Amino acid sequence: MENNSNGSAPRRYAIGMNLLIILAVAVVGVAIAYFFTAVFTKHGEERVVPGVENMSYTNAIELLHSKGFNVDIRDSLFRDDIKPGYVIEQFPRAKSVVKPGRKIFLYINAVHPKEVVIDDGADRTALALKDWSSRQVKSRLTELGFKNIRTISVLGADDRVVKVLAHGKPVHQMQRVAVNAPIIIEVSDGRLGALRDSLYESERLRDYNMEFGDYPGGEFFPEDNPHRSEGESQEPDYFEEPDYFLLDE
Image (cartoon, rainbow, N blue to C red):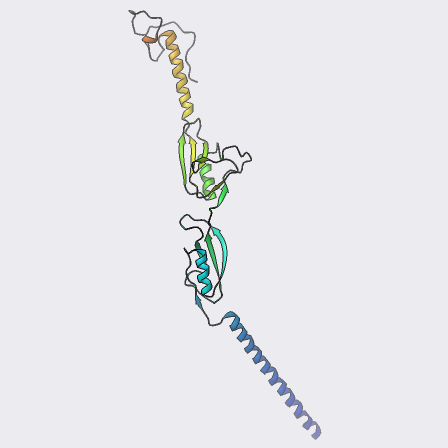
């Protein structure tokens, strides 16, 4: 029994030492992991993001790099109120507190405005949006991003769109137009049909007076009547039923 008790003591000692070694390795591993995490994440370090909106993208990139940030150009937009090639928007925003090396996303105003097709019809010789209603044309142009839109009335037979002009020139199907272009929509006012009817009736009235000297219920032109003599009354006479009457069409 004595020999057994003397042999168990070294075994307990060995187990204890192994536990101490495992614990020490674990502590060292945690310390190393924390150290490298702090190095790579720059734990405890902070930087304030400078504002670069309304700056040229070259100056913006130079400034951000000098402050320890990375830069990513995300998209090119177009706005009339900002110079081409200048920063429209940034993320994170100016004065945000972030880690060094953080990537800053920049949105740049395009050098050339976006161009769109306002009428995707297949006939490149045909006028774009011709015979559409003015409401439909305005709605389509607004959806495409046009803002400078003006409507004018022109003489025509109906109330449909006659043509669409960009920079004063007619736009055709499949033609690309810059979204900042000034747009004029010419819309027929419907007066041409009424004017044609009025001119036609005036000609019929003149022809009738030339032949009969008067017009029932209308105007009398004695000087145009070749059938009257000089002393004859200028008042219209009642007459027999003529061969035809002027009817409204």
